Length: 143
Image 1: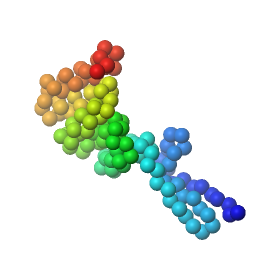
Image 2: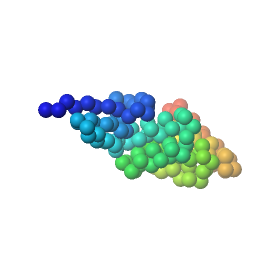
Image 3: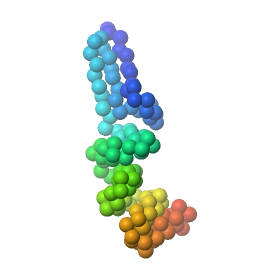
Image 4: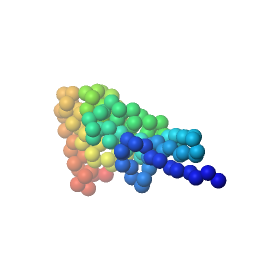
């Protein structure tokens, strides 16, 4: 039986619970790449791209996460944040709305949506969303 060596991507990314987007399994001379469809792994990739200042690549990873789970509030929220960083406020607002349909109790998402609304001049709506986020975070509002 040939010895099997498992090698992780050389990208240097750290992943929770040892997950990796790409793994190479070497059997003799043959290399087989495996690509994870795990939502949290794709989100982690997107977060890492945001951390290094590449929101375009981050959006791509968040979209991969959403291909795996269209109801991932975290993926929608993080995609909205990346779109905000790119100045695409209208699309970001659409993503915040979907995230909030998936998880209406996400205080940070309400807050971020409020900031996006204020940026495009919808101050009253923005203030309402920010206040809702603060109230949820303080335990005064769960809806």
